[in-house]
Length: 308
Image 1 (cartoon, rainbow, N blue to C red):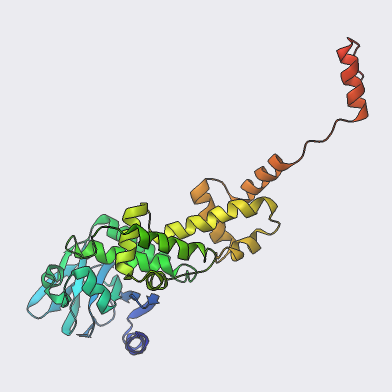
Image 2 (tube, rainbow, N blue to C red; image 1 turned 90 degrees about the horizontal axis):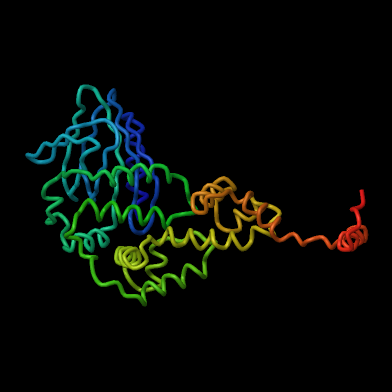
């Protein structure tokens, strides 16, 4: 649904020196990493979609209608659909940003309004970015190419959108335990498979925004971390009899042995190989005493000197 416009953007970017690459794309939205070097013409044009821009390096001025704001990593920019805009470099300094382009229905739910531009955040154009948003922005950059965890990308996108929009979002309601239990059942049936937030939401018949909010408030962790726990707990069962750690990692849905080892050690404080070695030692049967040991034991019991 997003790809045609992205192709046009990519052609334009290559011609002007700007760089724009997709980090994640799903039915819930698109996440891109955008770079505007200071020696290239500043970007300008028309925004056909609602977007949130999270600068993480450099600074620039944003001009829309009669409004001009200076943006850097301490701010988040709200771009309205149908707006003409222009950037301006500051002291020939370039800038880099994460751009979130959410599906309109998702944004409407989070804003609590059918017309997102009426939300105070979009009317204000820009607002301060919380330190936690900066951390999540860089985590999104690190997730580039991690195709085995689309759920984590979807939830990070919704978390950033929710924090940026503020407490007026409409997804804060009582969490239905039945919905949470159904989501768990869905994940248990697909422990080793990559799943998206939209797949789970469709299965339990609620929106993705509502599901991730309800699950996190009920369980204390997001869906992606719960899914990861299931996979790593399965590893605890399989490791003692595992001969090929790379094969096990792939069978559990990890992209590599390294990815599996990092996740396992982060959760349990020990590497998979060390855990396997310890499990094998604990499970090793005790050797029965030899005939010589039995004779020694009987001799000692009668007060005889031990055999040497």
